[in-house]
Image (cartoon, rainbow, N blue to C red; front, side, top):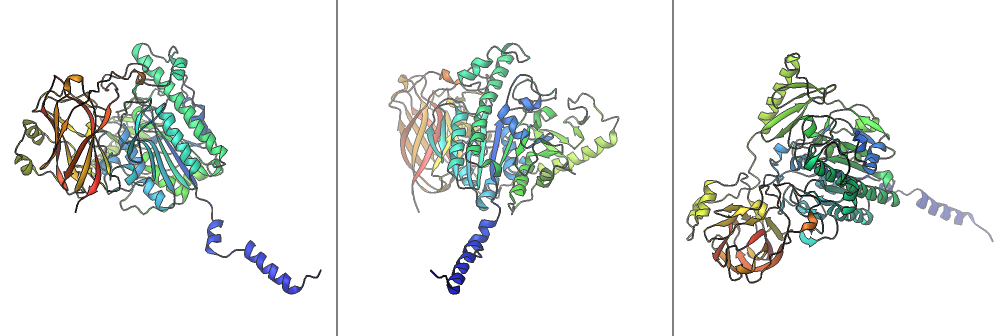
Length: 623
């Protein structure tokens, strides 16, 4: 059988096409695959809550392994509380620039003109998912699904009251989960990783060890009698924290194991950090301060990052790094261009991490909470009382050097004043022009004393709560965002996860200052409880001239859900109970700003309703 030259040439030509493609598709396939990103964020874990930090009580081998297989950021700083840290991670900008000035009552919301890290990565072709606690706005367009995330399971508030069979939301709709909340969210993250075509950006903001003190019984059984260096009630709280940390560590271990089994570990960047200092007094390396303080112990966090083959294993980065640096650093590692419309405060640390050289920061890092400021330079901390400490030799902040080193103190005071002047500008309101019309409210034919009370003492955050965002037609308005007027009270001092109670007259009301984005028909859903004696009572839900009368016809008065408390929760937190979610009717709402109001018009019994939320579902748009 002969093989002529012409046949050989044709075969060679085919081989050339197969072996040496010149198409754009082949060129793209030759490019390095962008790394996947997994970000794990603990809630209320201190720097000292890890065995790799030297904690003599708790063991966290899976979380520790991220540092052992990558780099440990030994001078890494976050904010004193949760939502500001999340805002800084999401935007690469100081939280005070982003509209995030608190943790509830609307002050936790990220301004709508800010770009999130998920938006940057999604634009670069990443599939994005969030599984856990968001805490930067609940209503669209503040919702994570409107801020760059494709997939969502978890909750958008701050503190959450239920950890077992928790009421959560999936893709912006309420769902009831089964099991422990950390496992639920971690399982969803693992499913997302397993089903996603790389590259993906997976953000897992974990719930623990934030209170309430609830952990699966198997973990509590290991800890309930162990020594934690304290006695009494404080000791029990710390035992529960350490049990929660070990449960979290096991959950992180399952995610890391899944990356291994899918052969994704070598091209996946895994980042782990916490959002503030410890939420109780416990071992924290003898640093001064805890959650809510601007001292070293309140803002120093672990920061572990691994990327096999790129980040040297077991390396240490001693440079001064903050949460504001995470967005530009992850983008730098992934070679993702940043076209941010606003200047970033954060710096790209990727080169220092890849080359394993100290990062040299020229500008200090600012810490702020509750009117107190401190400044951290690579070598010193200026605290909120203008005292100076050497952070290389005195992390405990015991020796004030402000008089012995006045030149350093003077420079840092000047730097602090410049930053305060720059950051404490009034928050921009141009992104949301709608404002409440006080005159229109005063014209209401049934103006209540409660409404006058609201007008005299409006909410601190002037941004209205948007309702009717078309891409997310389900709008959740929790008690946290409402304002009780008259005799109505919150169930606890902490607004997050609270509900309204003491509802027993027709002069009190609850109002939500809202902006109806879309005119149309809305279905009203309530989450509430009512005793049998309240049957026959009537509520009125109103907005401008639209009103809906709602009859309470079913009793739902369950006891406290005792499964939610391994040990008694802090006094400031609401006890959990299962609320009934029910359809109250439909109402036509015009577009525009105003007060969404709920009040009682007919009363039966001495207690009418405990209200956890009102939810408005856009069903039909109206021209």
